[in-house]
Image (tube, rainbow, N blue to C red; front, side, top):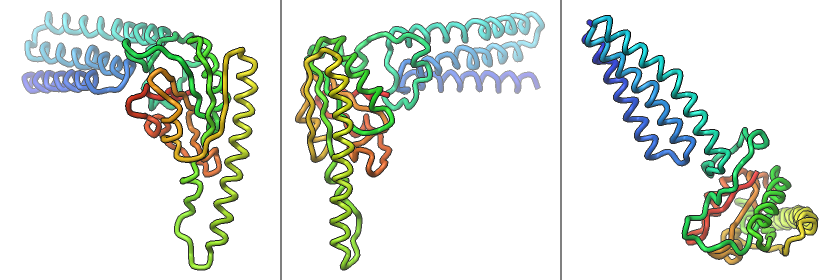
Length: 270
């Protein structure tokens, strides 16, 4: 019986270590990879030790295995916590799909350039894509701070996604006039919302003392922003906002939609 139990514990520990190794290879950021590694250190190694003790069966081996597992339980979580805290404080980037940073305002955050490779061109301009949403004020403040840190120009570009606003879906026969009125109403609402966002951006930019500019563009957001950026530009955008300017109440993955080939990945601010 002890042979079956020991074999099951060894197999379970080995599988956990394998899954943890795959997690270290495939998970998208430092914090997730560290989470996988600590699971291998505690659960995987602990099960292997207990499996060895079950196969040996003598008291001395059980005592040694129990002490080793206790040591892992006492040290690995603490070490993982300290490494994770050090990474966060030093500015190690979060996965771009992260929706909430629970430690924002609780722990200080370093200023590592989270997206630029070591040989990237120096930053000459910070572009904030202005889109109405719940995080736009925080995004404006962070874009100002980023431009000040790099000593660069700050540019606000409000974009109105005309193709999306003009798409009202299938129109019944005889309802073309109403569909056109709906398109015009949507676009007017978006222009008003964009004007409000630009005004808030201009107020913060004036107070910053930086060189800045602001403008309004209409068209496809990717094409508009692609024309505004080069390899020395940091593109930033507020989380949970899109260039319908809040009219359609869309919730899209902003980072993936604006990941422009050949340019630095966009920074999603919240």
